Length: 246
Image (cartoon, rainbow, N blue to C red; front, side, top):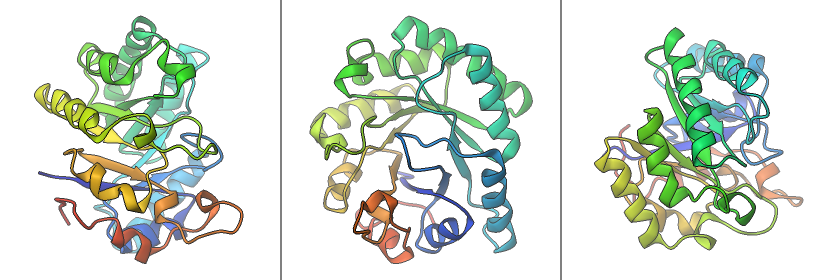
């Protein structure tokens, strides 16, 4: 099993901390919202710095935001972050039902692959009640991925400031079944959502391909841990219990 740890970083210095701690993916974001959309120049700065420091093998991921207001601009954004250096493009589909998510998702996947066949696209969906009413991640997610032929699916929490993590929405057994359904279709399962250090072993045990974290990788900040700074030591401690590649 090839389980990997993704650490969300604000810029080049945090990216170096993350990969020195053992992170397999450096996720460029601005941690002010669920996915945290960054500037393209910041994506490029992280890619350039990792290359300069001998980490050219570490892939960059990023996102185009939690909600997409126009299909055309969403496709432009997906292509734009791929141009900026992201190998993995996360596309938030909050607010869409399955039919609408399939329509947009197909266009997002086609757009990225037209210019960058080797880059990967992951729709991001949310279990928060506001969004799960129209799209159930565990039920509709596998259907979405199959219909649009994306590389996998990310389940993340939308509201980061209410003290809830992914395990407040789903039991580990439910996530395990989701992971198995994704693997049965030959797709990857990515899990995120304010996952704490004391929850990491339980999440790894689901067989998930990628765990995505920020706050668990940060040194405590008196205001909010998500706004702290990524620490290599914190990152290394999150890999215990995972079946990872170096």
